[in-house]
Amino acid sequence: MTPLPDCFCPTDGTRVPAGSLAWCCPVCRGPLDLDFAPTPAPLTSLAGRVNSLWRYAECLPLAAPTVSLGEGRTPLVPLRDGIFAKLDFLMPTLSFKDRGAVLLAELALRLKPRQVLADSSGNAGTAIAAYCARAGLPCTVYVSESTSPKKLEQIEAHGARLRVVEGDREATARAAREAADEEGIFYASHVFNPYFLHGTKTYVHELWEDLGGRLPDVVVVPVGNGTLLLGAALAVAELHGAGLIDRRPALYAVQSAAVAPLAHAWSEGADDLVGVTPMAPTFAEGIAIPRPPRARQILRAVRESGGTFLTVTEDQIRHAQMDLASQGLYVESTGVACWAAVREGVLRERTAVVPLCGAGIKTGPARR
Image 1 (tube, rainbow, N blue to C red):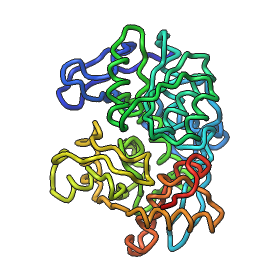
Image 2 (cartoon, one colour):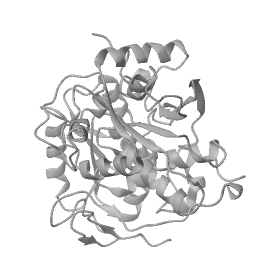
Image 3 (cartoon, rainbow, N blue to C red):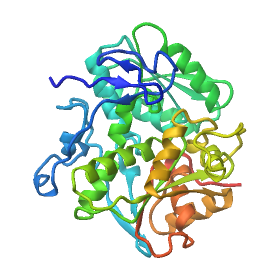
């Protein structure tokens, strides 16, 4: 079995040895990164490989999967004016979170905890529950009381224990992190655990392959905790470092105008969050995160890419969901945020890809 890489804290450099159940930096309690710098395989060597995200084996920190559900390799379809949509709602649990969840389940199998624990606004919890079921691992998922009933049904259907927390998404995260400090717990955090980011980065590796060894001018991603954006930045760095792309795309980060702490920090020219962002109702519940733990990394990744932040209103989300449905694509209200941000021409003739991250049946239509 391939040895696991060590983790380290990107803030203070503290190292956490491979095989540890520590879920955060023991010094600053911040999220961890992985000491892992792979070299992607050239395009010509991918033919004939398994048709899942595991085809990019050289870039993944875990080898020989045992819990795969065939995740990845989702279709890329044109929308209009050089903009394509990647249909990540066609994953096994109907959201892009499967990309990271499969790596967390594989890691948990190796670490053999007594319990897997996750917290989520819905989709990540569903994905963790499904892959733990596949792996035969006991799983508990903490969710806020405002989580979509359909997502709760899906989590329970996979056999996970639900812990519904009074209060908002932040209260849910606090409760889960307190429980995560108990002995023998594997905290399958899509925010703190860096293996998740190394799963989501396959989104961009797939774009690169499907576009014939290139990337669009702009990669548009929804941002709450930033796991897809940071994964995308990892993949771009890997491909560019290996000489497999000659330019880096700009990363456009999209937030709901109702809860937009990163967009606010960006507008202030700040390197970290500024002030306190109150929680507010929004159709984009999956990205309504007032204090993302990886804020500094997200802001830096967007800045270094030459990208920017965009925000969308509730009316824009509602109209974008209806527009996509009229094109045959029924997407959850959070998952349409990127299309809402760019459908009216802000890209100025540049090519772009937007992710459609979750299926519409998870939330139903966005209504006033």
